[in-house]
Amino acid sequence: MFFLSVEDDLMRIFAGDKLEGLLGSNKLGLEDGEALEHPLISKMLERAQAKVESMHFDVRKNLLKFDDVMNDQRKAIYEQRREIMDAESIEDLVVDMRHQVIEDTVKATIPPGSYPEQWDVDSLHTECHRLLGIDLPVKKWAQEEGIADNEIIERIIDESDKRMAGKVGRYGANIWRQLEKSIVLQLLDQLWKEHLLNLDHVRQGINLRAFGQKDPLNEYKTEAFGAFEHMLSIMNETITQTLCLVEINTQGNEDLQKMMDQEEQEMHETRQDPALMGTGAPQQPQQQSTVQPMQQKQAFDENDPATWGKIQRNAPCPCGSGKKYKHCHGKIVQNA
Image (cartoon, rainbow, N blue to C red; front, top):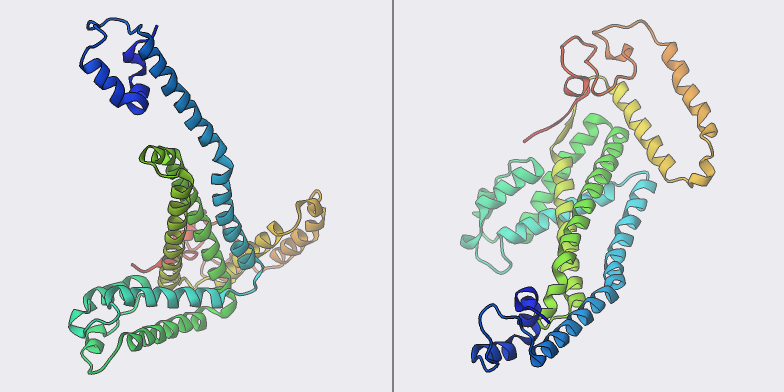
């Protein structure tokens, strides 16, 4: 004995038209609230349940195929991450990212084949300031006779390269290259985790596409690829914006260099095989070599950052300002 109030969803999806016609005409002579005991209804419900079980079986069968789609993306990201960690400098990578962002921005505001009066130079000027931190005379360029979008791209790239070269000159190539690697790895990890969460949301409801006569696996592949491409685009833009806007407090450069060296050492250790790490004994000489020079430093002077030694980022700044070290001498400032 079955009741329509319990199984109405299954009946509506898999036997809706026939059942609606049968019950709508009341050919079975059923009263409101009466149990549905007719053999014809029982057979329809059995067929609907069989179809539901078949659908769930197909869902479970595709689970590994869904994992393969995500695994292909995971391999690409992990390979790029290993290359970044193993490289001494990722200057070429961040330069390519910045140039690609500039080209995409110009193409979005200056459509190919359009006339100068159709160009959105205001948006281009705003985007250059937001992403690159430079105020460019884009409107003046657009008024030049015979100028093309490729020439504008070259001018923006040239100005951005000069700005970044100036940063390297101010802070030193060693510090800047380590900062580049640290920022790229942090943003890559953050955006990758957000991408995985997004794919989980897509995956939870993708099997409902089968009701629209669409293959859930193909639909998932399409959406996962689109989301991956979008993540890479956002990553290029975010890395470019962060590196173009970030500024380093040059006071206490010695401590900043030590912090960078320590982070580089930690990244190097994570690349090693854990089986070769043992109990950590091989790292003991490195610890001794960093402690002994600290003991030989001159007396503490609150006006001389060179005498402060290693300061925790959340500790009070030794200069006596009352601020945390990360917000005072140890801060990294981003210009809005």
